[in-house]
Image (cartoon, rainbow, N blue to C red; front, side):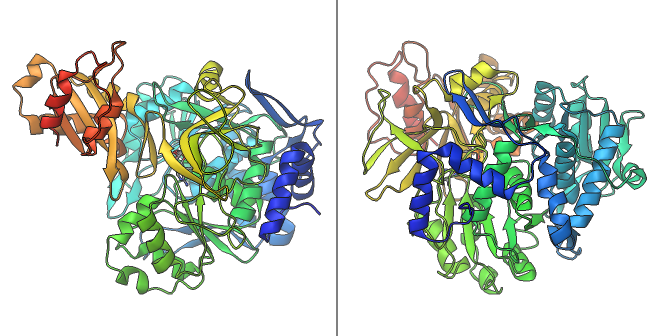
Length: 635
Ligand code: WT7
């Protein structure tokens, strides 16, 4: 028997050692015993971090949807696969069984085929959290089309950039979406985006809010009539292990968003294996991850990981504050949720509200609580532990990234003793390293450094769509033969890891990864703006908020500053999305720069956080006098 389900700490250490000593033999055993393959691999792993090139299970053939759906039909056909909880609590929840999911995915696959989508084509999915989203993702995988899900909170500009970057031929969207008491005109956003996307031939539109929308003849089609006419079975396309499964965009510290490419077999094996262990998933459980499928958390731990294990996975359309701040707990009680996985920003927002919202509900079904997306602070950890877990449910603080595909550092609940704010131990097969500024590995415990990974793991991204060089430069050039995460971390006396945050120009706001460059580009397009610099500063709910330092052109000097602030945020909302709006905008006459012209963000960060006690050496700046001016007028 392979070590698919780890149940105690000695077993963790023993399996971990095995996975590091002989990774090929370890992963081969997991792959062999827990998945269905159309053809076996020739080679478990080949890799070279210099190129970089990584291949897992090369030569194998499979279809991930046969693993996530078809193989469960004989044993779990009538079990709920997806439990859809709508935005409005008065609307009934929908239990989609594995058999129904199979039929819906097959029908959607047949619609895509009928619209001319072939293996390898890119399909953009821009949908709210309704069943069609999961069904579309799986339908693409079924026919070998590469899905690119764009979070439906992104603006038309951001959507257009992503559609064009990967040449999507078809877009799946809806007439609109619900967000608490509001509705959002998704189709209008798509229409605007497509004005700049000549490659899109077809738009499929799901009906959700029944709004009156424009349909462009030839291009736009209502989805439901096509599904009604489609055949309810579909022969899955046979895929190679290393065929791309999906593209998912993530912000970089510079330039355009990066289309991270994930491939089929390794991603499947790793997300399934981590899901089973990190959530200690058992057959009768009801698992709920509150993320959106527009992010990697939703791909790996709402769709693929849970379904590969034959689990019941909750898909929640709503928000934590609607109709009131008790919504999460009402849903936990109603569906007897056993594993609950959310983000620190949600926990902090709910912790501010009256405890009655939590105490009103019976949360005794909960066995495991999860956290992901940013460091969880001690206060939020204790609130979660005391009030939601009632000190009975272990908290798994899971560290990972869009690029890693699956959870990398995390406790295993009921196995690893937890410590607040620590992601604790590397998961099976993961070999972290802490590096110093000279590129040397820092060995031993009670040390901190930059977090790298030394050895490939099955679900790592293989490239950036269309830009392999950028992939190499971003992740494999800072440290020789290592994957660089962009995070700092410390390792304590017992070898537990604590993630201390980004060491690059990525800022995590409410768990969303934002690059400074695209936001600055957007601000700089405003006619009154000459130059800008964005930094993060601590915020008690969002974790970080954005602080913008903006130099105006002469034409902007005489304008009303509050109006300008509004216009700049409006521009950011249109070009990137509301998540990237600035909390504070300070107009300045200059920015601190090094002699090579690089903005000294370190200084700006300190001023934004109100901590100017130790600004470090500013004498090497090109314009040291500006620092005092910025400090005097800081908001
Ligand atoms: C960045 C990746 C992985 C899914 C959601 C985010 C930060 C993520 C933790 C954690 C501290 C965390 C890191 C990482 N992060 N989880 N448990 N503790 N920091 O995916 O958008 O690709 O962001 O989120 O800084 O590099 P992402």
